[in-house]
Structure formats: C-alpha cells, structure tokens
Amino acid sequence: LVARGLHAGELVKAVAKVVGGGGGGKPTMAQAGGRNPDKLPEALAVVPEWVKTHLA
Image (cartoon, one colour):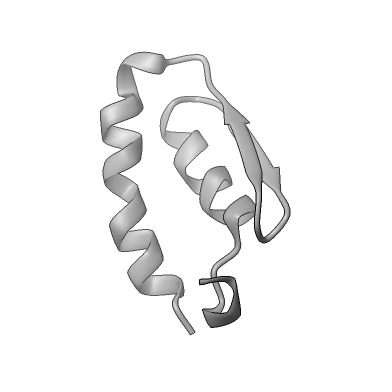
C-alpha cells in the first residue's frame, strides 16, 4: 500500500485527532496516543474513508 501512496504516519495522525491525541511516523510504521480512549471506535471508523481518499 505504501507503493500506492499510503503513509502510515499520516493515517495515524488523522485517526489520533479523533481521540484527542496525536501521532505520526514513517510510511511503513507509525504510533499514536490520545486522551479520549472512549472514542476509539469512532477513530477506527475514519480509516476506510481515509484510505480510499489517499490511494494514488
């Protein structure tokens, strides 16, 4: 997926905002943290649409 334009660090950064946190990393590996873990299901729901919009 990296070859198709996805960047793990950018994805994690976008998802972490939903849980009140931040994150980042390299194209192939990233990490994040947040202050509102109760919003994790909402944050994970962001992933499919983010991937669709960022595929090259």
